[in-house]
Length: 285
Image (cartoon, one colour):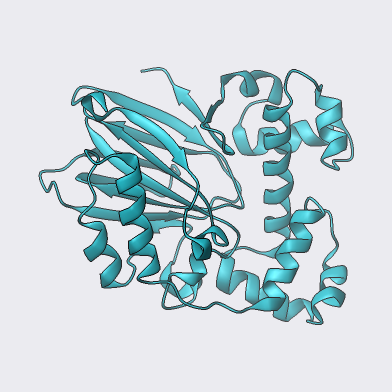
């Protein structure tokens, strides 16, 4: 790959990982003078981003991160993001190498030793996995063919995989996604046979989210995906109604509260990466 400049998505190959990981992306640049800046948006498929050979600086107040080349070429930084309500900005200066693991709901919970709320005290921070994960991953390089990178990455994940069996929480999240975030909490209580207090505790412990915030995130993301995947075929009223908003104005208000722009102005600017629901808004240098 010339100068190691690429942004490629891939599906999991291992059958165990296919149940937990939606897709991976491999993103690299060998250009030391390049600056790349983009926004990404709330998603119930949350990502673990791995940087190798880069320094990562997180600005919690501005919901952003800056990335630059590190003098430690083997340095590994693991950044997990639970993105519920806001657009988030990433700025990368110089050459970089990053890998994204985009998990299905509760997927990350199969690779950590403790609950998510014990591992993270905020929704956007660096984390650590078992030592074996980083040991295996230290052998990965942006110079490898993508198939080799994928092989090493999956070996690292399989070295730390473990059971996570909060079946009621799985059931609740499945119903929220299927209903596009419109299901009432009392219905979730009936479906899971858990009371509201217990459900809320499980959500906060394992997703860092309230039930209502999770529902709103699902509604926003599904509407964004639908609008971008059908932008030549539908108008904003169609998008709003298909995604169960009250009306077009409700959809636009919710969309603008997250993105700071209306759908009409923002949607044409967003780029789809590969064949997945990976949508970034690249800012001009």
